[in-house]
Length: 138
Image 1: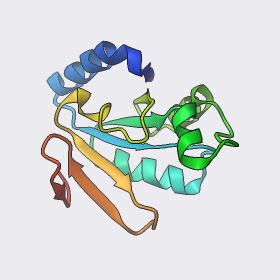
Image 2 (image 1 turned 135 degrees about the horizontal axis):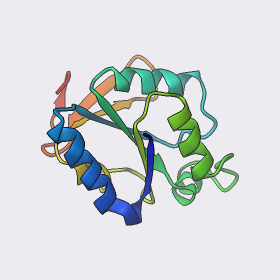
Image 3 (image 1 turned 120 degrees about the vertical axis):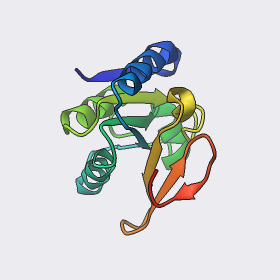
């Protein structure tokens, strides 16, 4: 089953994360605007998915995309973008967040790896959510 959460549904997401952790799943978090899902987005999702058993994608809300990319964006609403991410087959859950960055949404599930591919496709960073340490994996 695939899931989409809004920031008002933290308890539901937390419950799901606890279930996955109890099942010994390794949780991975990545984020972005994903406005018009393209090959670069798919490569990021595929790479992030391979780092664990469950992939949670933080998705910028329509308002935060406008703030980041301009008033003509997003091309597609958050519901459509979340649907596209889930249909890619890489993500287990999408959480739509209102802020510019997902720091407030990612720690809700506790300790997990955070995969965020930088602007240049070759550069990847791994961040342990709770400690903020940059690592080669976690």
